[in-house]
Length: 77
Image 1 (cartoon, rainbow, N blue to C red):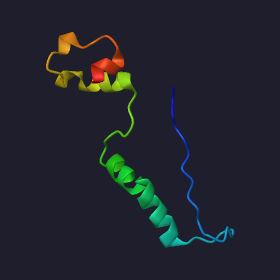
Image 2 (tube, rainbow, N blue to C red):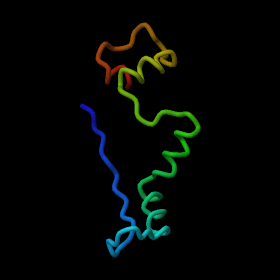
Image 3 (cartoon, helix red, strand yellow):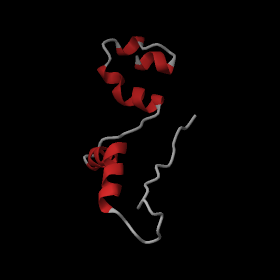
Image 4 (cartoon, rainbow, N blue to C red):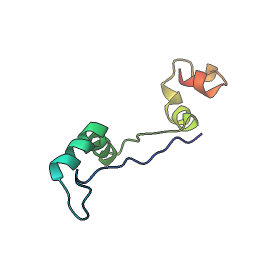
């Protein structure tokens, strides 16, 4: 199941068109962690991976690669 959602940023408290309160917008972006996410993505790191993609990418770090459990979520643990 894909759990994506849209983050909404309120541009101003008056709900006026074409008016942006820069401090309000920046505070919301900081609160949501968006600035950190943008920085991490710019550095080339993924934010969200499917369990199967995670296993394929990082299985080489497991102590016993040949004995990973068949269930994906157990293999990640």
